[in-house]
Amino acid sequence: AKSTSVSQALIFGIDMKDELTHSSQLLKDIRQSIVDQDFLIYLQPKLNRDETLIGAEALVRWQHPTRGLLNPAAFIDQAEESNFIVKIGKQVLMQVCEQLSLWQRSSETQHLTISVNLSAKQIWQSQFVDDFMLTVNSFDIDKSKLIVEVTETVLLQDIKDATEKMNRLKSHGITISLDDFGTGYSSLNYLHRLPIDEIKIDRSFINDFAEDEQVKLMVKSIVDLANNFGVNVVAEGVENIEQFDLLKEFNVDVYQGFFFSKPISLIEFERYLLT
Ligand code: C2E
Ligand code: CA
Ligand code: CA
Ligand code: CA
Image 1 (cartoon, rainbow, N blue to C red):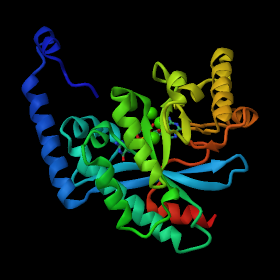
Image 2 (image 1 turned 120 degrees about the horizontal axis):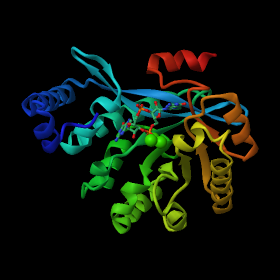
Image 3 (image 1 turned 90 degrees about the horizontal axis):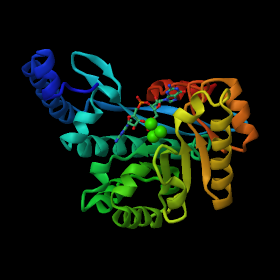
């Protein structure tokens, strides 16, 4: 949700004070919830074309003390602006590593990967790679099972610094994924320069591409291009069988979306693993 601008407030007479009070309360709540460790991960399954589970994306949820379970839309912008996302991101990463280390113990689950979303504010920390690896190395995990998702917008803000940091993560065995692919301006130009192992075609392209020839062609071109570069392709936001079938025809490698499963809690995921 967008907050009210000053001009809107003047024109429409909206009480800005309410909004400001509201957002400072949100920041207080975020601060307290970092201490109380109320930020949890949900996992959304990622499958291959045979619908075999290959891993999951970790998506943060806020178990708010009074408002219930909140999606990122309710807090992620404020968490970014205030830099609290750096601490939340660390708690998310620790939970991801914890889960990977549990999966590592069983031959049934040790092949599964987990993807973690990185915010710009995390990456632009000068000690980002060292901090990240310090956390990861405090767990006994196979680092190739850990995938970081970054958006093109973030990488392009400072391509030199971003490339250097992604290269360092890669040299430690971490897999790099380019999220929301196709929504930026110069995806295709930069693909060969970035140390990318995987792209995730943005949900907006998958949404209604079955009816739109133009979008269909674009998705097909993206997949072909990625395949030529030896980059893995994930389609996110797959909601129905028509989309799934078409994407399979295009040789997409990995599928994620409500058609298979919504993001679910760790407990629900354990149950999902049994089916
Ligand atoms: P994202 O990284 O693009 O994540 C995918 C979003 O699409 C998730 O929303 C997921 O629930 C949703 N989604 C998955 N499949 C479908 C589908 O078939 N249909 C539809 N309509 N939606 C689908 P969610 O969990 O609300 O997360 C929203 C965004 O918040 C994420 O977008 C990501 O940018 C951010 N986010 C989530 N977790 C984290 C985190 O731990 N750290 C950071 N920095 N950002 C996060
Ligand atoms: Ca993502
Ligand atoms: Ca995405
Ligand atoms: Ca997105």
